[in-house]
Length: 237
Ligand code: DC
Image (cartoon, rainbow, N blue to C red; front, side, top):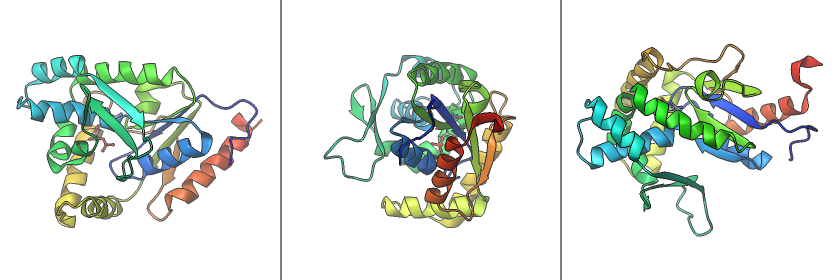
């Protein structure tokens, strides 16, 4: 189905905690609208991967910020022939690290890396440049509050911690990693805690965000509801 509003909105901002379903919803929505899809979490993951790869201490804020400022990250839509389940391709300095962004080591350290103000400032600058192109669905933690506060449609998608841990356990197993539900639940809760309480750009819904609970709703139903919203006049006029 195509977006049938006469003036298509240039940007849809989607935020929410880990494994809330926001990435799946964002990706499907971008497909339906023929928009670009940017999962901003993959940029913080790329910086984390590079930090670990270069064997820097993730606690060394100065070194991590410098790395974030210098790192060359490219994000591409999936091309023909890349039928390995990826939803986009991430290159760092030309190297395809798409799957390496999802390892337990990156999961365990990404909240720390993304808590540094200098890392955030650099990533936000790059994300805004992407958003300026228009026709973008951007997904993250602070898109509606910090990166694109003027986005005309902001969604905040959440789900219970238990449901999010179940989803992440399934994803992990599907990718061939051993995964214990209890460990993953503990990690989800730990990351929620760090992401929501960090000093800079904590995870929270924008005042004007629409809240969606995905615990009992499949992504396709949420996408349909959003497409319906887009057909309705803005501000109820
Ligand atoms: O959505 P994700 O699990 O891939 O995000 C990885 C981490 O990056 C998460 O712990 C919080 C951080 N993040 C952020 O701080 N701001 C964003 N816009 C996106 C992700």
